[in-house]
Image (cartoon, rainbow, N blue to C red; front, side, top):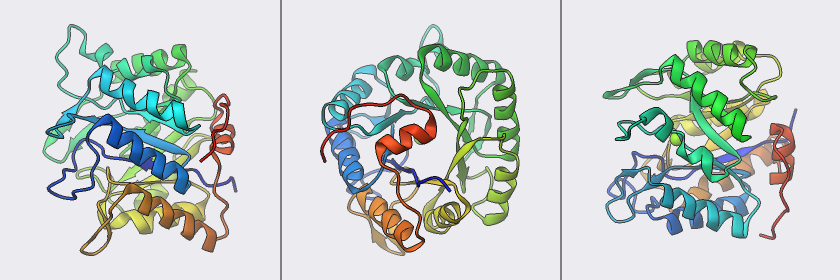
Length: 281
Ligand code: MG
């Protein structure tokens, strides 16, 4: 089994401070949370940005750029920027969605299929997905392919077969989003069974499923994603005061299960990413 890659998904676009007062909004707050998670043992941080005042979902270049700059200055953490914006107003919304690729991250999320995502359609048309994969390949940014359904894994395998994905393919198996694959072991096994040969994969579970599903992933040789984007509670009624609490718990659990946790350098090796100078914590 490879060492365990822990991803911290810091704020997403949905959770609010009304739900948990510790959700970071400004680039500085997001970067500080990322660094706390990195010090706690996360090797990857998954970044969305927010309007610094209202916390509304945002997609401004300068907000992403500030987070990247702050993290690069102080850490060797692997930076994963989202490309899952929707309803962007631009001449070419498909290209506008790929703006984070131009900011020099290590990874960008790539949603390989469409689904009903709670109350809306999360639209990722096949032509956009291929264009996005080709653009990331050209820019040397590895996609983290987010799969919410078995069909998404099959579609991702098609991208791999077309030579659009650098080896090894890297997946985030997303469980518990209404109305994607439910957050249970049967779903996880179904998605895992369809992964292309040689794939590396991580698991996220929403809400109370975060702990059991990430535990399954650790035991099965997968990697894990934790944090506020998927879950605000450490246990019933107990809100986490930082994303780092989830990382600390994942590190402790991995220790109990005797699954060593990957450093950033080791995670880079596992994911086939170029190295960076390690920074001191
Ligand atoms: Mg995301």
